[in-house]
Amino acid sequence: VANTEKALLLEIPVLKGGGLGDISVVADLSGSGMFGPAMLDGIALDVHGNIYAAVSTDSSIKRVSPDGQQVDTVATVADNLDFPASLAFGTGKGECQSVFVTNLALGPPGFAGPGFAKVGVGQPGMPLP
Image 1 (cartoon, rainbow, N blue to C red):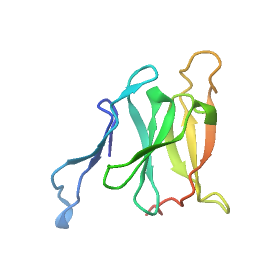
Image 2 (cartoon, rainbow, N blue to C red):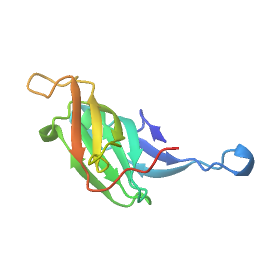
Image 3 (cartoon, helix red, strand yellow):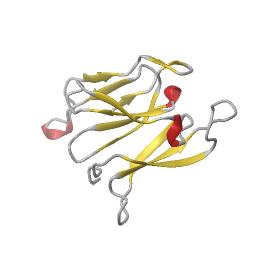
């Protein structure tokens, strides 16, 4: 789960019977963004459990290891991101190792603007139910 305002990635276990277990912090991405404190938006997971998070105020996509110990930037403004929001892995032929990202387009002139970007991440997405 992404906590947008606090820039936290959280894990909430689902218990037998459907109840919820204790919430734990997987990663804290609250370091300063390009335009103030970091804010998260959409997330997606790959088949290895890595979390891809849209950091809107940093105009980046971060890949976070399942244990939260490793955080890598996989896309930035240079990849046509402009305050990224929602993201999802492709499901079409040849697209399963790409993340498609929508832009809120709140950046100053010279940013990518409204639209979406395709970012190759080298891993297929986790199948959705």
